[in-house]
Each structure stands twice: as structure tokens, then as C-alpha cells.
Length: 451
Image (cartoon, rainbow, N blue to C red; front, top):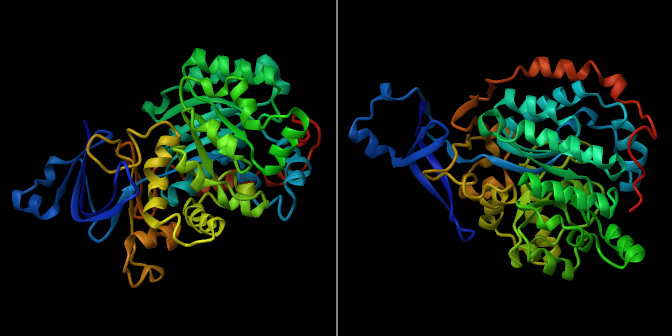
């Protein structure tokens, strides 16, 4: 057993059933192995004469804020290797002229180093968990194992791959489920209804049921996709997923984006154990429209924060989507009184944990929860005067405010220094392949974006 004491911090507390946030001042956090054992006022512990020799590690967190590690509910982390190569283009050109031709250069080693770079960036921004959807996922899993983070991994597959692709991703799931001492889980990951025909979706859902796992999939990314589906088939992409059994998987389905949801789609989703990953920076950059987050949540559908990939977002900094979510939902509603600070923080913590199927283990600093904790230094000029800690979390945060990152009870980033990876080596490995990775090679692997 290992023990960790985080001394004299302030703690962000999010109510479990309603968006209410408050701060506990001057508390100690006791961690045993990978779980939070207790929270106690520091003054009481000092009076009781806590013995430092009783702990394997002690962090003096005086003046810092402890909160649950952020959860990135949808990303293509290794795509950081293509960062900056698809700028100022429509979503159609983004896919057809840039992203898929760029990915035709992709090699397994690229995914390992790209995943390491993206994980390093997320660690620096306080992201402790990610739901990733990409290729060569054995290499991605190896990177997660080394970096010490938590991940829900899906090997992206397309209908053109047939049953062989389904079997490949199923084999990956069996190799890595509960890997890295339980920090890695794996789900099925068919790409989207417009790249997977109905038979392929049915086969993917069947395999998910056999394996007892969920499904991570893109759907209704834009209203244009929804209209195209209605014109071609008379049903929406959400209805396609319902009819092909995607929502019948044993675990909750994770739906990326859903900006094109119609009211009848929301009624359908409310019947199933689904969660929605919301990546507003991508939506703004690619002019995709705004997802109806307030309507989803009013219908009882959980929403989680997401970065998406760095080719459409440019950073893996989840604090940006947090404030963009709050502001764009206010703009959608035409009133600044929606998406309040407590609601935004609830989505960033407890609700994001629900979206990845871990609502009873992550997203809160409470006894019994997994010890995924970040310590924030709010002394920067951009936080002063600190009238409201919770307002600063939503609207002021910068990655450099993250001081320490703990995942599964293990310190992986301390005093702004990585403890599990060599960032210099990672950057050098990625940079060595820049010339090859910037070449666009058409029609080698995937298809044309034409929803």
C-alpha cells in the first residue's frame, strides 16, 4: 500500500445531484493506494499531531486549490502531429483535402509519439482522463501506460474495412481492457453513420454486446449531415444509430458532437444510456453550428467537455472548451443567465465522468473516489483580485496555473515538472517526422467526406 497526504489545500466541492459549487478551505486530503480515503480540516489534523513518517509522500498545498482532474470526453490525441496543417478551410475540405490525405502518411510509431505529446500537453493543463478515438491504438495504449494517465480508448474503424476491422478492434479491446493497472478501458469505435453502412453498424453493436463494452462514435456532427440523411433516407443519423442497435450496447454510448440534433432526436437519446461529448472550439473554428447543450441536459442527457483533435482545435487545453461552452450556450439562449458557473463546473467534473461511464468513481474529491486530483495555483495576475474562485476556474484559467497532477494516487506532474515522460525527447521524436507527416497522399485508405 502507498499513502499520500495533500496538506492544507482548498477543495472544490460539486454537489452530486445539482449544479452547486463551494470551496472547503484549509483541508487535508488522505490518499491510500489509488483512492481518496478521507478529507479533514488541516487545523484538526495539526491538533491531532499527524506524523509525516506515516506517509510515503506529502504535498504542501498551502494556498492551492484541489479539484478533480479534468476529463476530455472526445479526442483524437495523436493528431497533434498534424497541428497547424489544415487552417481556414471548410469542413468538407478539412476532411477531403487535408485530414484524410495527411493520415495516409500515418505509421504506428507516429501514433505513439503523437499520443505522448498530446498526453504531455493535457497533463500540463490538468487533464487526467481522455476518451480517445484513433488508429494504431496499441501504440496509444502503450503511451498512456508510460505517461500514467487514464484513458478510454477506441480503435476507429470504417465500413470499408468490413468484418476484419471489427475483429481487429475487438482484439485490441481484449488485449487492453483494464490494462495499465486498470487505468485503460477500451470500447468499440465505428467512425460515423456516413462512413459506416447499416450492416457494419449492426455488426459493431453486436460485437460490443458480446464484449460487454460501450461504443464511441461521431454522429450528427452538423445540421448539414442531419439534412443530408433526411434527404437520402428519410431518417436522421440519430435514428440510424437507434435502428442499427448502437444504443443497445451493454454500456453507455459516447456520441461525439451532435450539433445537428433535432428535437425528435433529443427525445430518442433521452431513452438510452448515452452521453454527448461537446467540443465548442472545433465547432467555432469549422463553423459547424452550436450543439443544444441546455436542451440535452434538460432532457436528462449527460454532456461532457471535449477538445476533439488538435487539427481542428489547435490545443489540448480543456479550459478553453469550458469557457467557450458557457459563452456559446448563453449566446444560443439569448441570455447570460443560462449555463451558470456551477453548471459549467458540474459538466467539467461529475457529468464528464458520467459520459465516459465512470460517474461513480471520477469527477469528485470525496472518500472512495479514485484519486485523480489536480492542484491549481491561482496566484497569477490574471486571477487577481480573487473575488470568486469558481468564476476564475471557468473564465480565467491558463494551463500554467496547474501545479501538480495526481492520477490513480500517483503524482505524475509536480511543481510544473513531468515525472513520467521526457518532453524534450517526445518533441524531438515528433519533429523528426514533420516533413513526411506534412505530405498529403490521396485515396490510400479512407473515403470522401460526403454525408
